[in-house]
Structures are given as C-alpha cells and as structure tokens.
Image (cartoon, rainbow, N blue to C red; front, side):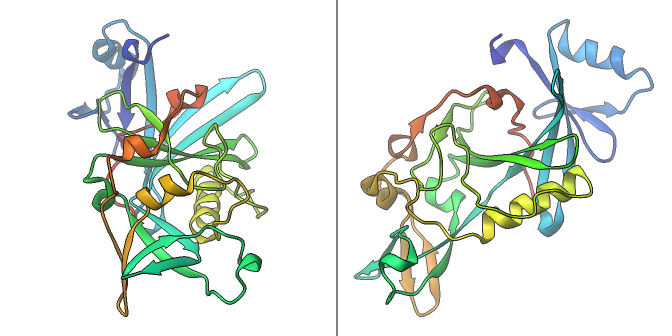
Length: 252
C-alpha cells in the first residue's frame, strides 16, 4: 500500500483531531464517523501526540501484531548532541568520531548540531523509538526526512547507525514504567552517549554534514557544505510508515 493512500490523523493531548495542517474539531462523540469523513473511505493511521520533558513533543502510533503490541514513538530532534573528539583547522571544527582510546591526548567535546541552521530548515530529523507491551524500548532509529507532505527518508552520514537507520545505543536500563518513560530513557541515552567509529561512515560526507565554527565561546553550527540530500543515502524500511513526521514543535 502506498503512503499516499493513507489518511494521517493526529489526536492532540487536548483531544483535538487534526490532519497534517488543520485542526478539524474537538474530539467528537462519534469518533469513528468523524475519521471516516476525514479519510473519505481510505485507510487511516491515527497517532496520538504527547509531550516529553525538556519541551519535546512526540507522536505515538500503536500497532497490534501477532507478537503483541508495539508503540512507535516519533521524537523530533532539533539539536543533535555530538560528543566526540574534533579536528579544528582555521576555526572550522569537524567531528572525528573516533574511539577516545585511539587519540588519548585529545579531549572529548560536546557540540549541539542545529538541524535547522545546518540544512536551512530543509531536513526533519526524527528519533523513532519502538516500545513493546512491557514498556521496553527495543529499538531506536534515526530518520532524516524532507519537508514534503510524504517525506523521502534518508540515512545521514553518522557512525553508530546501521544501514536500516537503527542506532547502536549501547546497554542501558531500557524498561520504563510507561511508554513515555521508556522513550525518555531512550532519548537520554541517545543524546548523552559518545559517538565513535564502531559503524564507520564516509569521512568526506561527515565533514560536509557536520561543520562548526569553533571559538572560546564554544561551537556554532555552520551550513552543510552542499545539499544534505547529496551527503546522505535514501532508505526504504517498513518502520517508516509508523513515523509521525508532523509531531513538530518544542524540543531542544
């Protein structure tokens, strides 16, 4: 089934039912009939919007399968925290993404990569967290999407990212007390971990994507050296259909 044949409907925490861009009405008593009118008989994907700590919004798409319930939670990433060693030449800093043991004399620094500044607001970066029925966050994927109504999805040139965009998160306490608690744990692990070359990507593409002006005041995100699409690889994975690209607003 093509994505264009699916009507995407969001349910906000306040109970508003909305399409991609327009709030239609407060939640109706006859919700099924309302969704039918919105979809005009086409398949409907309903996602609930929720808010995490630190101002993050997320979209939750719940799927029932033979193996049980899975919650696909989409968290927009506005600033990607890069903890690694950096090479600095004439004020231009690029991440090395090496294991600290390889270069023991170089400090590990933290640089917040601002997605909007780097890509001219042409990329949406999403952490897609899969949470099972036992509130265990079993998988995280980092997806880069275009600003189209039906985004094209890309794998950005960053290490610790498998070909299917699955993040190598390392071990952490991934079982929470609720779906949102599990997502909070996964997000903290993702943003707080060091990046290294366990899954190496193209150094040339990395240097073109992640560029900073470095000074005594810290790191300032610079635009990518060329269009971010040309620095990334287009992907097609089944989990893409559960991503709620319009869970925007808030975030860090």
